[in-house]
Image (cartoon, rainbow, N blue to C red; front, top):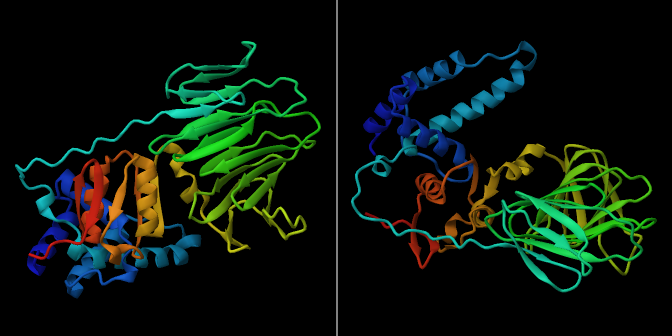
Length: 377
C-alpha cells in the first residue's frame, strides 16, 4: 500500500465511513501490535493529518479534571501508536475475493480426565452429569455442566484425586471444604477427596488455576506449584506453574505468603503479597511487582489477553486456548512484543490479525500450524 492510499484509508476511518469489516480488523490490529521494538511504518503523515487525528480523539474523550494529567499521557501514547501503525494497519487482500480453498484445521476434542485414589481413570464430559463414587458406591462428587463439586465427609485418611484439563478446555472444581478452583487449559490439580480434621489443607498444581479459598483459620491452605508454595487462610489468587515457564502468583484479595519450595531447607525466605501484586520465582529468587490483576484473570471468561508479551510466550497461550500445535520457523519474531485482547475469535481470525501486524505467513499442514517468514514479492 502506498502513502496516498494509506492516507485515504486513514481519513476514511476518521470520518467513520469504513465498512464494519474494515473497522473491526483495523481496531483489532491496533490493539494487537506493540511496536516499540521494531520500526512500525515507512509512511509519513503531514501535520494537518496528525492534527486531525488528535482533534478526533480529543472530541470523543471526556476527562475528569483530577485525572487529566495522567490521562493525557496515556492519550498521547495511544495517539502516537495509532499514527505509527496506520501505515501498516489494513491489508485489503484479507477481504478480497479469493477462490483458493484454505486447508481446514481439525482440532482434536480431548476429554478431561479424572484419576481417582483407587487407580481408576474416568473421562469427564463438559456439560455432562457425572458422579464420582467410592468402592462402596458412596457419592463423593457430582458434576453439573462445567463444574465438579465434592461433598465433604469426615475422614482420618487422605485420599487424593487428580483432574487433568487438556488444551482447549477449562473447568471448575469445588473442593470438599468449599474452595472453588477455576482450572485453565493444559492444567492438572491433585487434591484430597476430603480434608482431614486437624491437618492443613494442601493441593498440588501443574499449570494455571484461580483459587477462591474457603476461610478456615484452623486449617491453612497451601498450593504447591512447582518450586513455589502459596500459603493462605482464605483469599482469592491466581497461580501459574507451567513447565518451562515463569512460576508466579497474583493476589486479588486477602493475603498470601510466598516461599520457595526446598525440601532440604524449611527456613527459606517468605514474602507476603498484598492485593494487586505479583510474586515471580526465578532461579531461586522471588520478586514482587504491582500489576493489573485483570490481565491475569481474563482467561476464566475465555478471553485471551497479551500484555506486552514476547511472541514465543504468546504462541504457548494460543496453543493452550485453542488446543492446537504451532511451530514457528520465523525465529526473528520470538522476542517481538505484542499487546492484544481476543474473545470469541476463531483461531483463523486470530492468526489473520497477527499475520497483518507481525507480517508473517502461516500454513496448515497435517492439522498443525506453521508460522513462517513471508515470501518476498
